[in-house]
Image 1 (cartoon, one colour):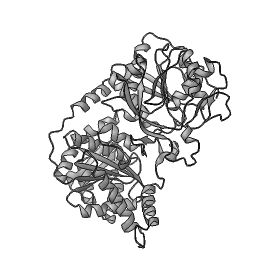
Image 2 (cartoon, one colour):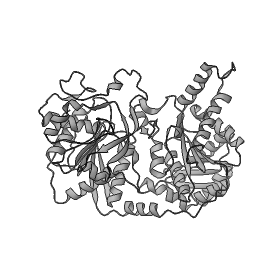
Image 3 (cartoon, helix red, strand yellow):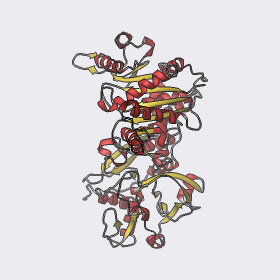
Image 4 (cartoon, helix red, strand yellow):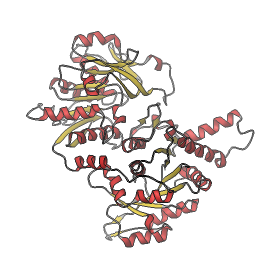
Length: 542
């Protein structure tokens, strides 16, 4: 049986949720026993988002094989079991880089290298490579980043036009548009959707399904109008209304309208009846919580809602497992603010010196007041530096990333990183095995001796200070397998204070929360009852 392809495009405006929509469709197909793979094309010229400012792009999602990718791959992981690797994300920069390197080697035998066919051929080759992964997917979902009409997206749209022509019986296009509600007029307006479909048709792609993002449900009359003017069969017009409570409602919303039935009909897919019981059970916990937990997240990109996307979602997953709702309070670590009143605190990863003192203040307060603390990557380094300063008495202890001349470089650059000049793709990236020390909190949380987690960093704990830290009560409960690099640090005398050098948030799902987030949230709830933490200072001077 030939592989089927679903191309997901977007129009009118950006940030409509193509990634969530594509992931939701993938989840619905998997619920029918249909194996899938997912691929995201990004139209920017960067080789990958690894060197991009989180304020511009949001988080960088890392795969097991060390690819720095678009944050939509995080959605793919949380909603589906699609294999995710370097084959799952490609940028315009990667496409042109591959073509230009091929030209420099003489592979084109003196031909003039052009967007068509050379660039479009490379794009099509990426689609086929994704389809040839093991285990072999039955359906490949390909999300085209950007908005129809953007000049940057044109090579990708031309490539999928060609691909559809070459595999006409195996492809469909799902086009996500926006139907705005004009409050002053009291009307939903279909013209933006009409125009978006028109632009797509002018490129040579006729959508098979239209998904209309909207604030309120579309009437049958409006759907009939959209069908007529966009040249899409009436049964192919669906609305994707803003969900009331959780983004995890989206698959069920689409399923109730019969979107997965329509997809299977168009692609002649034979699957079993959908089994959504695990999804429904998870949603029940979200919609009917039995309590509440308040978590403070202290970082330096909190003004951008997607900068810590996987971290925030993993916290939600922990709350779902505990059957409670979660209030996440976001604190910028370089601003004076009242950070008191939370049941636990998390310090996520990051780079550079901005906001260090605010993070150190939170780590100290959590340690001295027995408040649960979870440090991720930089958050672990903050926890260790604070301990060195205030328990070991090394007042000038620091990371050489922030203070190159510190007399006590508790955190220092990996030796293999010191001579690297390029920034992109040169950190310790991807999955590494970690051995856990028996009898520690980490071993109890994971329930096994050997784990694998994903990394993205250049700086590590300096083992020269290991014995002094251990003598004062810190335990290094996880180390790189067959190595001596510190992966996990914890304070056994504290109810729950633990830092990890890796990024566990990348491996958490709503129906299968990462054990660190699950136990962190559960401990916050257990300790919350009848416990007064004491107030943080009204402001933190940084």
